Image 1 (cartoon, one colour):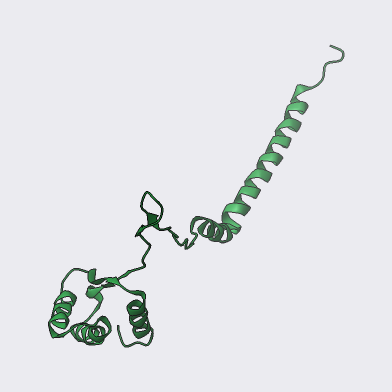
Image 2 (cartoon, rainbow, N blue to C red):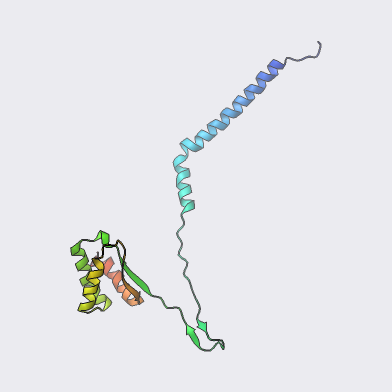
Length: 147
């Protein structure tokens, strides 16, 4: 028949274009997943972890007349210890160093030693510390006097 084209040649050309396009996509995918793998993993880690400290500024609470202050924001800290990481000597040294900073007498020091001897991994040593006392404890830790 006149005007009839060979569909086999057309099919081979179309198949060749498909193979070239597929090969290009596979090569690009391999480039992203094999060659750039470490860079992308690092970027993903940076995107998923963001450390930000947002201070919570609270206002005072007044009575219904708005004159008498009923409550204000007061900053207090808690002193805790990871006792499972301390030896007996370190616990005693820590108690001896903390007692004067916390204003403890002999009975308080004995109670502190007992808390440090607790087998739990996380022990609260003092609650409601004022900022001045907290700063003294932080300074002692930074100086290496408290393990």
